[in-house]
Length: 192
Image 1 (tube, rainbow, N blue to C red):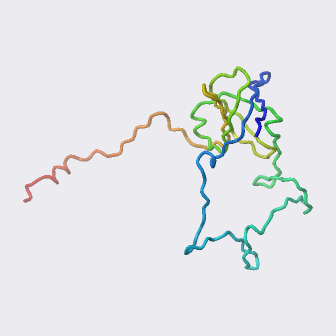
Image 2 (cartoon, one colour):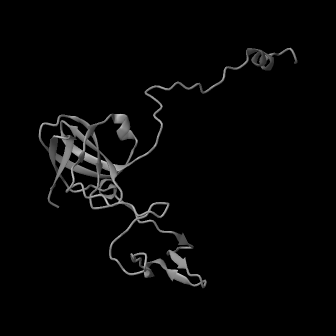
Image 3 (tube, rainbow, N blue to C red):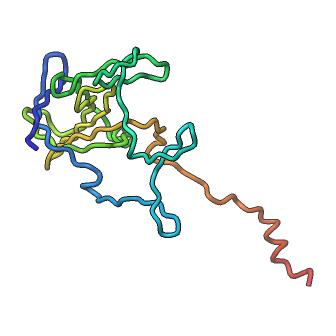
């Protein structure tokens, strides 16, 4: 896949241009295995139980998008928990999003789903930068971190987990101090 140009805004008047490479998936990094559930050596497959009690294989169903009147629309519409239609965000390749400095502990809270190599066209130095990213027009924006190092740059995207940061040093006491009088009683030979 050819590199795609993307522009992010350092501030209102400073656009920074990048060339975004192809996404590297977890499967490409670590490999994958196909999970199979078996019963007595026979692989089981997923089915749907119909209201009439019949079993219908999952691969025999298909979803369609319809509007409020039930007509086929051909467009995906996503709703939130209250049933309100969510707005569609324009792809990051067509709309420049804000770029701000970030810290390493913020990156540690990211549940990364994509990793993309980046070529920086400009004088943006080494560091960590936070942005929002949307590969295609979608109702959800992913959190992203642009990490620029001496040996290259890459964009990590995913969702930030709400994890409390404990700090750099945390002291734990694993053993309670024992009472010395009890220990003396156990080692006493007077009872013999």
